[in-house]
Image 1 (cartoon, rainbow, N blue to C red):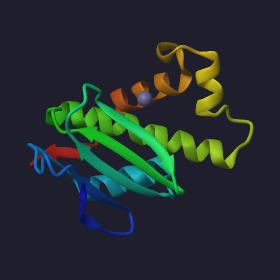
Image 2: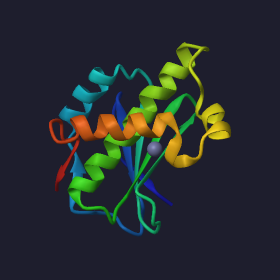
Image 3: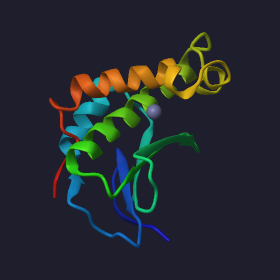
Length: 139
Ligand SMILES: [Zn+2]
């Protein structure tokens, strides 16, 4: 079972027991800056896990953002992936505060994965900012 290694008001980080450390880490200062930039107000939980072919995942549960990043990614990929998932967190908060915004579920009903507006936006923002604000850096 994963265990919590660190915990503060902004987020906590949980590692998979099988792969306790990777080549990269979260830069906490930069993450706080990015949270402010994206206007995120909810708690963020970050999971580093191994054993999947996906890059990352986003879920909203218990009024918290749950972001999963795969340990096999290199630093640059992990940073881009984290940015992508943080944009999903921003989108979720937008959906929660404005009922006229189309939800993830509504978009999934209408669009195929590659056509979903929320995925396009996440890729666009990640591409634009991930090189400038590195939330994931070499360990
Ligand atoms: Zn996505």
